[in-house]
Amino acid sequence: MNEAFAAVCELADEASQAQRTLARASTERKNAVLRAFADALVANADMIESANDADMREAEDSGMSRGLLDRLRFDADRIGATADGVRGVASLPDPVGEMVRGRNLPNGMRLNQIRVPIGVIGMIYEARPNVTVDVISLCLKSGNAVLLRGGHAARHTNEATLAVIGQVLADHGFDSALVAGVDRYGRDGATSMMMARGHIDLLVPRGGAGLIRAVVDNSRVPVIETGAGNVHIYVDSAADLDKALPIIINAKTQRVGVCNAAEKLLVHGAVAEDFLPVVANALTEHGVRLHVDESSLDIITHAGIDDLDIVPATEEDWATEYLDYEIGIRVVDSMDDAIAHIAEYSTGHTEAIISEDYSHIEEFTARVDSAVVMVNASTRFTDGGMFGLGAELGISTQKMHARGPMGLEELTTTKWIGYGTGQVRP
Image 1: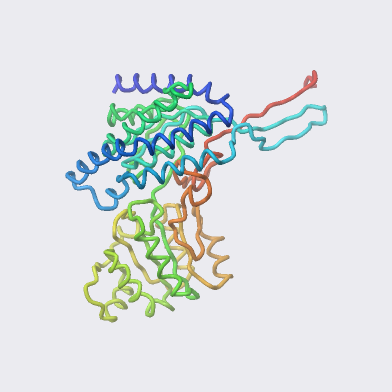
Image 2: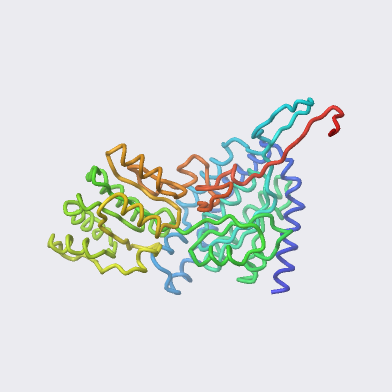
């Protein structure tokens, strides 16, 4: 641990030194690096995909779930899409130097508050190769250096990606120390990042609830919490059921191993008898196991649908983020019951209401306290790219300066500049 800590602190200090140059770089120069990075990802797609194949084989041999395997996969199509995301970040306005507010004081001084980079960002995450690219692009555009702990499962893929960005940085006159990985130090590397106060300015964990809790509980470095996604969809008594079905199928099954996938379905009793058999059958056709409460079980059983993968829900189910082809289903008597259930079990990530009653929608969006609330839309839209942020560092579920998808602005802090003409305080 002592050896790993010393090494991580040295990497962070080298990153901090390199960041001072990046912080002064023009927008044009930063964008040129990002466009070159995107081109290099595509040019090296075969090499990166080959590295990912090695990670996938090891993960499959270790028994990784289907949802997590999907999250780990980084094939040529996903590499290309991620490269497009990097180009998207390059096209966004540069937040560095933006004036947040300003005022003239009665004594003639001018005060400006401007955005500046945070410094050295530490990122701890699991089996998400696309996150490596997203984090690098966002940090470079916002003027920050970054240390990455991408986890054992994606180590070959991440090593390949870091080699690509290291060469791009060097080719454009930047110190490759701006982006460094600590995976070679294993768990000691992650622990060392948590202890590196004074070397790393901000730590962001992204992954399962256990990882996030470990970082929040043990870190001496300031942390932005990106919470797990126990995501709920509430089908209201005034829902358009034809509209509800494709939303739920998309939210649950498009990609099951991501934090914005739906994990719980709450259905108002007034529409449950008509809707539950339909949605249960559709989810089963997509290979989803249903964890249902007693009322849901009774309705679905009496509908006589064959070959359902259905089990009684336990108390533990309501708090579980499955990240797999599983969903919890409960019948609620009212919107109050739905909101109470969400308040008790939600991780504060994303919730959705499906309803055609404007007053119900307004009440739900006002009372549900999560980072994102969707109305008649899939929860899969909670994403930096979908929000027009180019990419995201993660979905923040805490209530400090960053909440929801974290883009470029969330990777800056501010400083005040006072312009005087000789004023002294009386």
